Image (tube, rainbow, N blue to C red):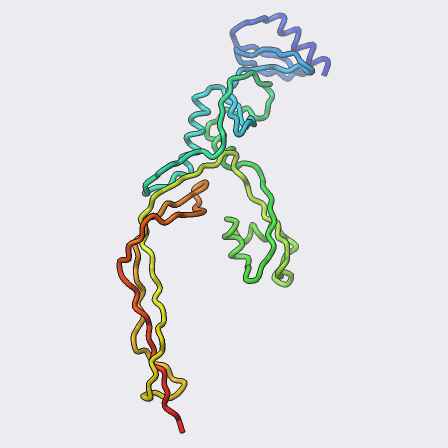
Amino acid sequence: MKKIIVTIIIVFLLIGCSEENQTVEVNKGQNIELPANYELVADSSMFIGVEMYGLYVNGKAIVYMEDQTSINQVLEAVKDASLINNVEILSHEIEENIEIKHEKVDVFDSRIRKSIEGTIKYILNGQPSYQYHIVEIGDNFWDISIRYKITVQELLDMNPHITAENFNVGTELVISTHQAYINTVTITQEDIIEIIPFGIGEDVPTDTYYMGEYKIMQKGVDGQVALVKEIYYRNGLAYGSKELTRTVLKEPVQAIYYKGTKSKN
């Protein structure tokens, strides 16, 4: 460690403030090329400072890139990744507080990114997030996997101790997902046609049929309603809605049955 620090200091004294890229030996036979805007910064520990642009999410630096344009391109791509197509967009924003700061960063900082595509993927993949699901009445592997947006095989891999035999109400399942570093919230206005299910009317007694027999008197027919809704999305997945208008296009028709009253004796 002493050799590394001494070597860097000597090289710094020799090359001074040259604007050209320089090479520094950090270990025997191991060199690094420094950008033209580097600076040796001395504090409690010695590190090589380089001017970068930091992407801060809710006050925490997530990545550093060489220029602000690259970070802006990353942010636009992250927003576009969850854009809802073919609907009226009322708003589409990043959920977190975003800041871009120009600062000096240790050249060895693992948050430094060069590839725009790689940075987009890193932000969208995010960090591991663990939660627990307590099995309830009616639960099954398929429904649980859909709820947490994972496959059944992924659910089983996360819980290798769970089998069909010990999958009981009250069983605790571990759910491992990834939480994106940056999330988007979207509000759309959408025209939706929904079915109005038909109901069943009161039975009509008749001695034409024996007791216990039921025959269709009137077939039930579903109705239709046209809705205008605000739909709320997070990262492209709907989580809520608000009905704005409702127009019944076709009233449902009740199903009505004859109820036999004729005695078999």
